[in-house]
Image (tube, rainbow, N blue to C red; front, top):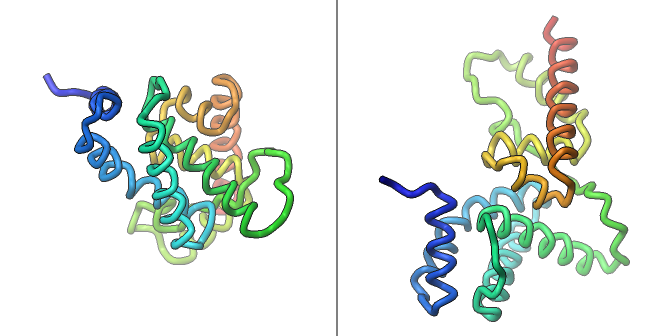
Length: 185
């Protein structure tokens, strides 16, 4: 019987909490690519994204994994999002705005368009329809579809309740379908 990703992650987390440095390195190795891709959806500043990932893992190392978690994936993505946004606010030397959840979240056309059978005009129209969604709608579609997070994990990362996550995802997909339908037909 093989472990789920969450069970594997929790095993590694618990091993790290008991002092296993290799478990910590493995968590970093597993999550670095996904965190980097997620960060690049928020900002195009790749070096800042890399620095924030390293800062996050250094902070985790310093606290020796004291947090009790249910889903490491949700925990790490949520913590990373806050680290990155905090650094963006600090570097822009502006007072942080109240967290409305509105980030400059974008999904590239490579992620959005999986089918190679679409012609260039259809791809462009689909990307334009997607660009009409709010940043929160783009973010929830990315987290649910491309990162395969559960609604519970999405609600934790986006700091909204479970039902709000379901409603936001439903409304986002509904809006996207409506825009796509009007574009293609």
